[in-house]
Image (cartoon, rainbow, N blue to C red):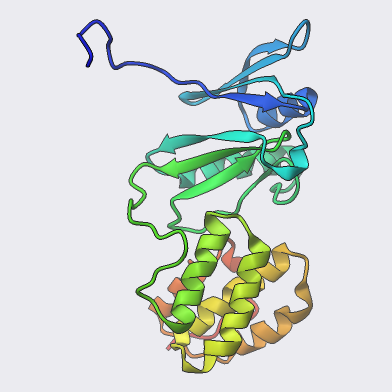
Length: 247
């Protein structure tokens, strides 16, 4: 029980483990963060600020392997995640000539309407940006109210956006489309094909993209259904060669 002497105006600053000081400095500076403290001797301490939040780093315990991506992390709660993702990807393109989507460091894809994305730093920490009004009833294993391909799509969304497992999402969709594609709605088929095209490209397994693209181009969609399909992927331009005309 607070007695009035403690005021609810605290500020929490995450202290993350750092195994790559130079790479960490270069990465956050590339994203536009200000370095507010930089020390490597006699002990390591780095501090960064961007907008209204800070990230601090100290020496990591021995034996940490960044490639395992289990070093640590923090949550950044924001009003809207899309502007943050746009700012970081623009900074990456400006500095690196591309969006860092693989290895460390990287940023996860952002699908329009999604409520979170993750930045992985050079030490394997996860900095997760989450929209404050993200629905509390999100089912992280896929909705039990859905059936057939619709349920497969929902489960693949969870694997992509919350577990960051593109390969598992790819396998689930590939199998689900074979099992449920014939009985699924046209728009669910189109969304599944669109996501498979995106995942194949991301996983550098483009062999079947033309096949899925050809199937997508044969579907008949309304203008609203086309928008739904395009909103299911982070970069709708990947679908442009195969998107069918609308009715």
